[in-house]
Image (cartoon, rainbow, N blue to C red):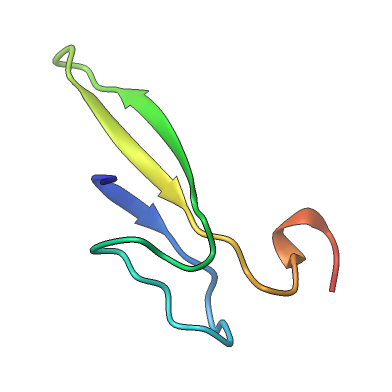
Length: 54
């Protein structure tokens, strides 16, 4: 599960940031200054506007 989440503003669906989200978010490891790694989840909109569509 990711530590940090980015979700589309005003989306048509509710994004689950506590479990398995239906949008299939992309999770990326992010190294921190203290040497630990946190995970960033970028949630996707159903209309694909983060890719320039819709």
